[in-house]
Image (cartoon, rainbow, N blue to C red; front, side, top):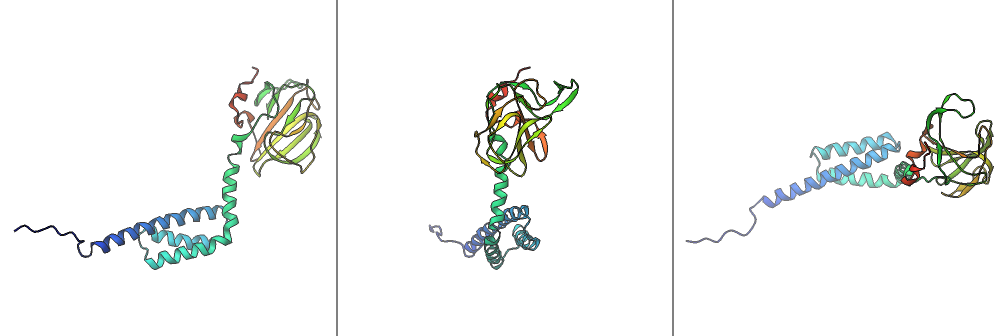
Length: 238
């Protein structure tokens, strides 16, 4: 005799399926807690907080969570998040800063007459490391800020002549030298492309030009690697 197939669920299978789904959800929560723990540890939060969170994470990754454990872990994290909200924000701000080198513009429109690296010094005629690039421009040419930042220093140096140092972040600064004059002062907030001075030949310079340096983590780097507009990289006179 024909017997219609049973359309219901086998007893107990629903409970197992629910348990499996709950286990997956709790593991996802554990991974989320792990990511949050890493972010907060990058901001140097209290060790006890990170240690407590890591305890919840380890249990979740090992599938040792109970519903009570999961609930406790979630409540603990959300209770602490307001306390460390500013620290979490600072992590993302630091991440944003690391990308600033992709947004730099040329401070003046002209050919690159001397590249970054070792070269024969035009005045002393010996081999020295050129810590920036030289941009060939006429006397009085307006000089722009390569990025937004704060004017950290305006001064005169026997070699650099009149120069401006702009701080863009804790790890990135730019320097503009041999200026005929500066149109900004210390602590001025400047936006990208703002005119900060005029080109000249002060200091050790054989002709008017802009000497432009980029300092990242207290080390001089090639400004040509930091430019947003790749077409500017073709303006080199060999």
